[in-house]
Image 1: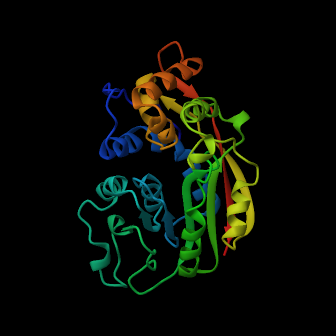
Image 2: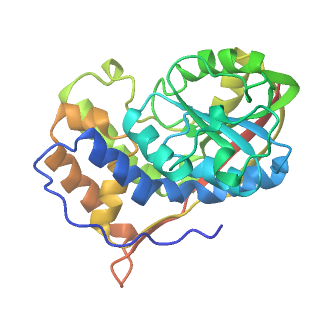
Length: 294
């Protein structure tokens, strides 16, 4: 899937904090598609298709699941963000009742998906069939402590997968290969200007080389290969870029330490080096994935 520029977004009132629904829509409409090349690369490598029973941890608003379902996979998503999950339901389950179908009946494409909120993931099917692929497409390695909740989630998911199932973890690439890292430093500076940096668990930090391997080791997974994928962030204008970036949650500590209008202003200024003559914003980035086995 080729990354595309998102359409222009209406100007927001930057003096007001974004509510959860607005932020989730900004993620779904602007930012989420920036990771589409990562989804496609992982699915190509894992040969995702009709035989795939995939569990997506932190599924968000469901784009990665939608791509997998289009390849014929049966997908289950788990997320604690109710607003993003509601958008995923609108995408994947507009009128379906996945669990109501007989266990062995053929399912049309819209019945290949199931979404669960919080809690322990369920088996892949009504008859208790295990998963053979677990994915985590929320990249780690860009904020202190951003993998802490992932290890227990993986430990809960692994017993629901077949022995030798694949687990794919994703993370940001080296800062020198991610143009967005320079913009994220704005978040760190603003957050640290108002409080000691160690008091904010989600403050930005440089990506470490072994972030993914560390999570795999703590979750009891065995690494079995890795790859890097180019995921440029392309936006129609600076306003869309600011809204998309703030929807990631990586600027939350900065917003708490100052205010949203200040963060919006400084992020917009940091984006100037990446603004092209036609007003679009283009930031090359590299993301990494680690394939593990249970």
